[in-house]
Amino acid sequence: GKAAGELEAARELTTKLEQRTKAVTDKAKDLPDGQRPRVFYEIQYEPLMTAGPGTFIDNLIHLAGGVNIASDAAAKYPVYNLEMLIERNPEVIIISFWHGSIAASVEAVKSRKRWQIIDAVKNNRVYGINADLVSRPGPRIVDGIEEMARFIHPDLFKE
Image 1: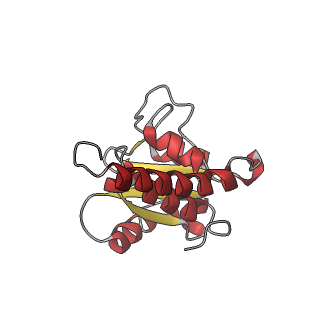
Image 2 (image 1 turned 180 degrees about the vertical axis):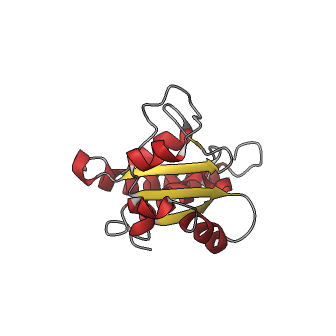
Image 3 (image 1 turned 90 degrees about the vertical axis):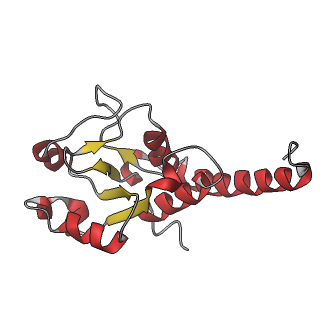
C-alpha cells in the first residue's frame, strides 16, 4: 500500500482479511477431535498425491476445523495409493483444480473404481476448490479458508 500511495486502503483491506480469517478460526479452534472430520486433499490423481505435514494446505485444513489424514506422512507431499486412502477413510475429500469444471472433476472422483466405499464419496462430501485460492499466501487465501471451512463444516459455516 505504501509504494502505491494507498497506505490507508491497504490497512483497511488487511483489517477486513484478518477479521474474516478470525471469524473462521474462532469457530473451529475449540472443536474437539471427534468433531473434526478426516479430510483428504487431492493435489493430483496420477499418481495420487496429497499435502502432508507442515504444508500450507495441512495448516489450512486445521484452521478450517478438519484433520488432514496425511498429517503423519513422512513426506511433505506424499504419494498415496487406494488402499491407504480406503484405510484412512476420509469424511471429506477436497480436490484442487486449475482449469475446467468443478462439477465434472467432482463427478470424476465419485466415479473412480472402488472409491464408493469411502465415507466422503458415500455421503456426497467431495468438493472442488480452485487451486489459486489455496496454493499460495496472499489476500485470496481468506476466500480459500472460508470455502474449505464450508466444505468441512457446512453446519457451522454457511454462505
